[in-house]
Length: 289
Image 1 (cartoon, rainbow, N blue to C red):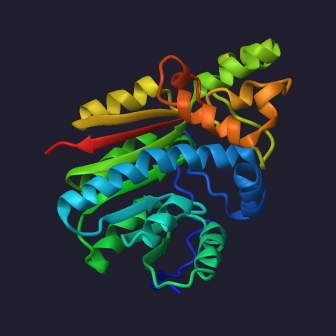
Image 2: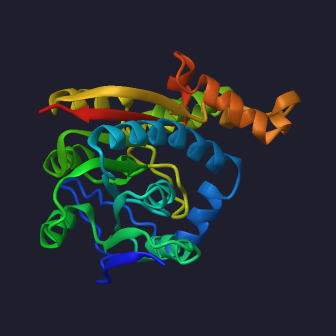
């Protein structure tokens, strides 16, 4: 069982709107679909393999340097796999999501653990999180995880101010986000030129299917890089997640061996130009005082 502080207020339907009528997306109504679609197969295994490789090694070094467990915040955590594994490693973890149903799934996996974990839970939009953290008096964080959240926010750039307020000096941000270039490239390969013309005309990737997990307003890596520079972050790790797997239309040879696919994804995930083809991009950046 975990040692938990729980915020049980039902904020899962609180969607934050921007001035152009965009809203922050919650997966509360499709939590089961999300779990199966994102993590029910090899795609999810590749995603977690790259994130583990990037994050865990750095966390171990930082924890040894500080001589203590880290304080970790997972914003928009969803199923929170990486955060839960960090808690198992002995770190103090705060887990947040706008969806109560998503966090219920994360909590269910915690109940299967035999050891006590230091975890706090907050169900709310990230915009309401700072006040709750101040009440908890947990202090600033050594590491903030923000995975697959930017592309679902009405005003994604605004979250940088939140990171600034919650990270320690020299704290690290783990930012994973959907790569819109991968959408274009995949549809070029498939010959979906009409779709690309429509996306270009509308200037967004909006899908009519409410269960679609293709973001309507993904953020390009160049824009994210400019935000990090403006907020004085130094990039220390860059990786692509699924740099070739999603482009394979005919499986042959090693494509039929999941372990081999993961091994090659890891090999090429940090090599240019392949990393920039990843369906998602992972950036770890240090906040400079």
